[in-house]
Image (cartoon, rainbow, N blue to C red; front, side):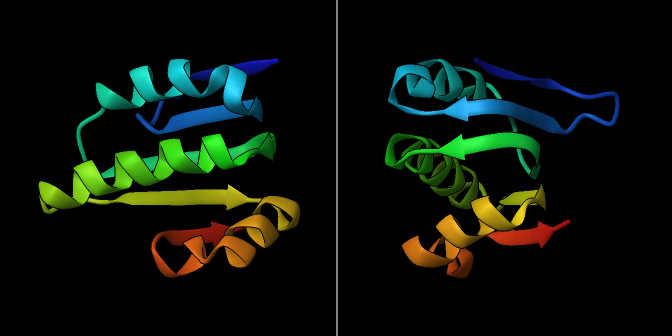
Length: 96
């Protein structure tokens, strides 16, 4: 199960599993977001390479507009994936 929405603070909240089956839905949602963008990953259990691609495309689009993507409440498992993939060098990441 995967959910994506805004919270009361205007942050994007991802929960569940962001994998290839959900990547198009996530990309469609994030394509409508203007920066700077804060993405709360506290409830994200899993992210695949397709999910990483969604975050990368969104980040590139926002950086072209002099904005950015900040990932907050990142658990240790998801943070490990960001470190292994080198994404920790691209994004501002705030762990729990």
